[in-house]
Image 1 (cartoon, rainbow, N blue to C red):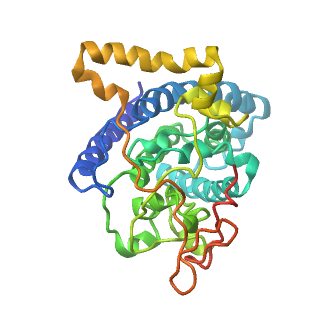
Image 2 (cartoon, rainbow, N blue to C red; image 1 turned 90 degrees about the horizontal axis):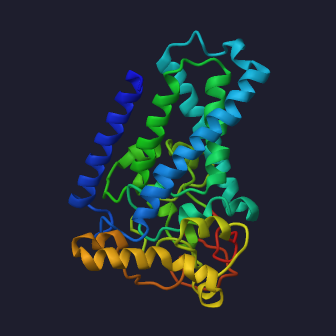
Amino acid sequence: MPKVEIITTAILLIWVAIVITLERIIPYRKGLPFFREGFWTDLVLYTFVQSYALKIVIFDYIIQPLDQHFGFSKLHFVTGWPIWVQVLFFVVTHDFYIYWFHRFQHSSAFFWRTHEAHHSGKQVDWLAGSRSHAVEILINQTIEFAPIILLGADPMVVPIKACIDAVWGIWIHCNIDVRSGRLQYFINGPEMHLWHHADHEEVFYANFSTKFAFWDWMFGTAYRPDRKPEKWGLPYAFPKDYFSQHVFSVARFDEEALAKRSVLFRAYHGIRVRLLTRITDRVPALRPLHGWPVPETHTSTIPAHRPGGNFEASPNQPAAAAPSVSSTAAALPR
């Protein structure tokens, strides 16, 4: 492993340890278990298996053939720049793209299906950001890393940029009670992004920024109230299984109802539970492998404040809590 990759990996691991510690000391949402529901799906299947597989697809089967065929890297567009300028250039330009593509996903019924998995977690923490549909990752990371290679950037830019992405992704999703003040107008963090994951009408179409919050403030989609969300996740049922989550993006179905109707799906759907039950019955200390759900205090989308300070749960009325953001439960792409 090259030296720069060793350094960036070490930085990432240290950052994970710091964030996990702070989540225990000053939690944004108290009472969330470390081994929360979906923890192992996010860690094993999304973070390790999917990331590794898609890295091979993106770099070996998409970017490398493009570079060999078109030879854009011969232009050396950014080759003469200092490495830190190259990194800054690609961080800012990609973040600008991500803001608009993210915003587009929330308004497009088709592309919402490639993004809804990211919003399905009802317990948002340092690991929640890893849950992203494979198609979404293919699109975003190809558009992210292809220009770095095709425009002749220094090879060090790729691992540095990837480390920045991972560190920032952990930061904006972490369950830490942060007070960044005016910095939140420039740098994005959990204060605004945790609201983005809330199941509240007023924030269905707000806070799309990833690294730089000023995109939301510039384009009228910023939402930062003085209170915390009361409900998280999606306003509709979503599968808990990794493969079912991807199938759900193509064909809608009820996971539990299908398990009752289909013997084959019931057999597949129950394998993990049966296996874990056998293991944890024999070794009780391994019970966290099941993941612990957190009781929900609300069963439906939190309605937005209306003019005059009244609540109205009608799904056909636009939210008025944030004048620059039009959002309703009915309008959210399904």
